Image 1: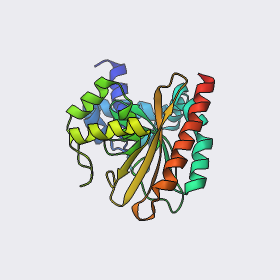
Image 2: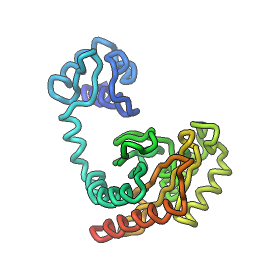
Image 3: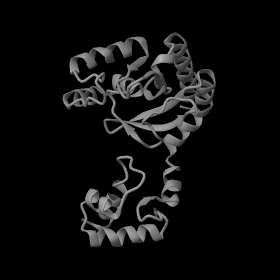
Length: 244
């Protein structure tokens, strides 16, 4: 491995979404000997790319965060979306999420939640399965055909007993998402929660993101949530079209 490959392997160890990793965990994920990993991690920490915590584990440093925050496309989409996400949160007082497609997974760009919102698995820059989430179903429904076939051909993990794991059933649901412009989950990612999601389109009518609300099952009113989510997604789409 070249030096650059080793460095990217060390930084890539944090991609699964773990906030903190020990040196041993970093080396195992990066496929590096402990001595090599110790040297590289030390250098990256000294330069601010990683941060060493008091108990000895490591997390992404502020310098790497600052560099990543400059990624143009996600930043612009997030900045455009935030006012509509805030309005959607004010209307529903529930979790609001913005996500894009990333390597056959959901990549969360932004999340708003209040003190009484249902706990969710998503976090900014975190990943979730496509087949078990509302935003994931939207992104998969409008993805390229080869992406859909690749995801359906792979094992569909049962995150909860209600997760759709049958490819034929999921294919039918994706067709309904394309028809209605809305996706729903019912306790498929976590027990006790529902979600409603809608596509966000650019000026070429391509689906580039998905917007969703996640709520407690016992307090859900899809008649109220669906129009609110759909309206916010369409308003954001108009803004994207205006700058395309």
